[in-house]
Amino acid sequence: MMIKKGKKLVYTFIVLSICLCLGAGLLIYHLSFAKQVIRIGVYSGSSWDVPSGQDNKLLDTVIKGFEKDHPNVKVVYESGISKADYADWLSDQIVTGKQPDVFMVPENDFNLLASTGSLANLDSYVSHDLNLNRYYQASYEAGQYGSFQYALPFESNPVLLCINKDLLDKEGIALPNETWTLEEFYQICRRLSKDTDGNGSLDQFATVGYTWQEAIMARGLSLFDETGRKVQVNTSQVRSALSWYSKLEALNGSYQVSSSDFDKGKVAFMPMTLAEYRTYKSYPYHVSKYANFSWTCIAMPTQSGKVGFSQMETSLLAISSKTRKSDLAWALLKRLSANKQTQQGLFEQSQGASVLTSVMTSPKTDRLLQSTPFGDSVLKQDKLNQILKKAEPSPKFKRYTSLMEQADYLITKSLNQGTLESDLASIQRQLETAAN
Image: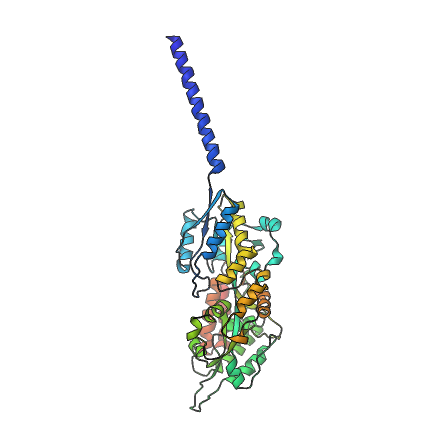
């Protein structure tokens, strides 16, 4: 009886050993051959709020190539999230610990996400695996917070100054060159603002959409230092810039000029982003907009007359600080941001500018810029390249967006009321209180 029990125990031990070996083998097999999943967070449509018919087409192409090069990887994303809903969606993902491995950074949220530890520090990857010379400096610096790199650029969108050439020709005014000054700009605007039909009111205007922020930037000024704690509003330089802007706005009289007046050929100058230019120069949009006059775009005028810094937005891609697949996430991020083929495809399918100089100076890009219904009035490749090289990213501190919104409200209200001289000291104090 004891012998039978001993044999049974030995048999049971052998069976258990075999099961354990099989289980371990299956686990090793699964770990070796099961696909790793990388999640991307993206929104549908354009980053620049212009019509787009290429939703996620480029992303799907990139993913297909990435998976081919990484057979053990599956890249997934949730489609159909609008840009308007994306920030809330990503916030919910972060709060619940389900954030994507790689994701688009919501507009205006980069400073907050970087300062709160939601984004992975990319410095170690950048120093060993990225040639920074391939980027436009402002595009790359858009992903910096403090002295660290937390995101890579995906697409940029500089602001241009669009010009109704027909109005200038009618008044015998030569098209400005790239090194025009603010004084030249004002004198041209003064000549253009007039009553052309003799009915006693202005019906031809110089500008629309040119803001006090552009007047500040044209002088190389900033309302805040790089930390956001020092406010620089109540200064002689800012006061002079805003006073000049008030004088420029006064040329339009009491009439509230709108973008539709530019569309109708009544306004000479209007700032426009590259994405807006590229969208509305194409059929069918140009049929109802800008079809009745010749126009082109150049860089903004500056105080000194040198080609100055341009305003520019840049969409950013980041890696979650919680990802467990950092190396794969970096490889995918780099393919989206630093790969010439990806970026060339982006310029062809989207509306902004590539963040790589090699793409924006390529023959393909030149041909795309030339394919326009406006003949010799196109935005030239060398001109756009210069604007991108001279662009400047927004300051990077946690509360920049909210402080600028408050500054815009206070300064715009003061300008509209004509009380700028007496209000600047109060505006300075209010912004100092908000900043500290």
